[in-house]
Image 1 (cartoon, rainbow, N blue to C red):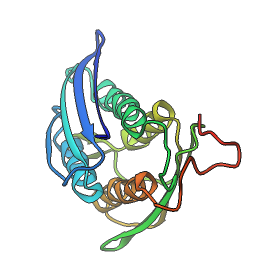
Image 2: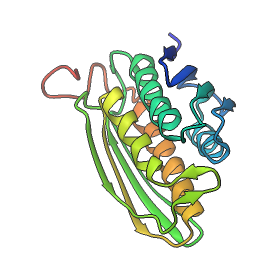
Image 3: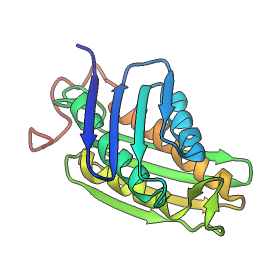
Image 4: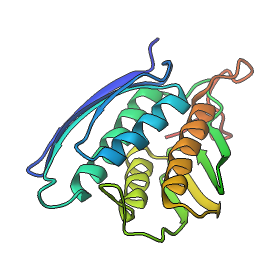
Length: 196
């Protein structure tokens, strides 16, 4: 069964459509109107080996907040749908990813219980046309709309571009690991017998 989902969301602030396949090859077509954010989502797609299509029309005349946060909400919703009943998946995934001088840890539990832990700082207000404070808001939105426990911690950093890119790529690698199948897992990986 294909593990994919399509989600549309329309508000007065944003109109968007997103499609993701968990068992892809890293292909993407991304148009959010925020160039650096597109670059980050492309890295997420390629390094997680997902297929992702995103088209967003947001109120960028205001700022990038609604566009990025709402993309996180829709991506999290689509991930939850694509993952499905979680039978046979590893549930946990983690990655410590280097990007030149920067080193970022990302750990995920697809528990069904949203929790977001963040230990990171940026030294600039913007990277290209994206507000750095929106990196945290994006991951928070993904975590809560998907129902995942998500931890992101910068172990060492320097260049803001490298730090952000390491976050998106480590998230991709951790999510790929958490959603992968293990033939030894015949049901859901939980003593409760369910992952709500």
